[in-house]
Image (tube, rainbow, N blue to C red):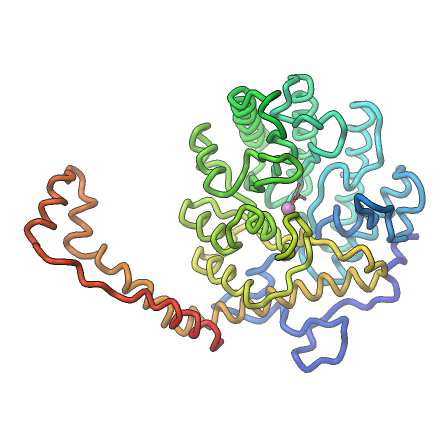
Length: 437
Ligand code: XUL
Ligand code: CO
């Protein structure tokens, strides 16, 4: 039985930085108060089903390398149930509060739309029971609108409205399941919403349909009384060459165009941020500035590879900068840190799943401690506030006052008749300061 798969492992506990136990947390001390809030409540960690329980360790060159019991044969009702049981037991062993899934991650394979709905409904009943048994919660649910061949040309942006309707069926069921399971958010990653060749693509039609789909989803959320947040997960390329939800700013423009900027936020993934040519912290800071920071998919890419390698986070340096932005935003609200990360293909043991997650948890926990110390120290924050202080003064207020014209602002410069005083941006001072923590 899959429940036994993790039987040799004890529940992972905080043992502090001097622990010699590989299966302990050194920095994640869930009840420790950081800036007045428990670490567990700051971070709201989640384990994802797809990488850690569904992916068999295959790549484009070779077959699955993992021999988890539920991979030994077709994904039927018995094996799907084993997988669900193992997943929730694992999250409990890690003592993390949340998990995340796509519909197809948790259910048996199905042929027809009727079987699909039936199989998913059965899975949701079981998940409800398992959440109670293992004391775990759902950070977010989603529908997989990219894996099946019917979605090869997109889901909401497919040239065929019949495919759009199939996607609507999956999202209706996944959204209602998320609601029933008490999920905190619902995610839409636009898997194949984009295109490979402009020769066969009508961007205008696809964008309009994409906006229509999102409006229908938001409307349904309100009809069923789901109070969680709908999140879009930006990604610039892969699988399609041009993904429509390129990055946070692109998503914001899309939301504005379709009147949804107060309804939908973003789920920012570290590896997607770097694929778009941004840093992870840039994407978080942008979402904060636009008021749409929702949740985070924690992982990392490989600086030498241009694709989505989805490795577990392991750089405290990098995560500190991301965590500074999260703290400046006042936290993630009902979002959290979901490990959208997978162990490497040669990491075939159950222990490797623990090492991946423990390393990610400790990296992020340590980054939280550093970021909080930087904020509490106050020097960096004071420097930034001071740099923009002019905007609180007379000229700053005049520029923003209703009725001020370009000519009035221009006349200020003419009347002042002097070069503005140059001030250092002190980048190296800032970098040195960060390194002291
Ligand atoms: C794909 C990805 C997805 C989403 C959920 O790159 O990140 O797993 O997080 O569909
Ligand atoms: Co993701």
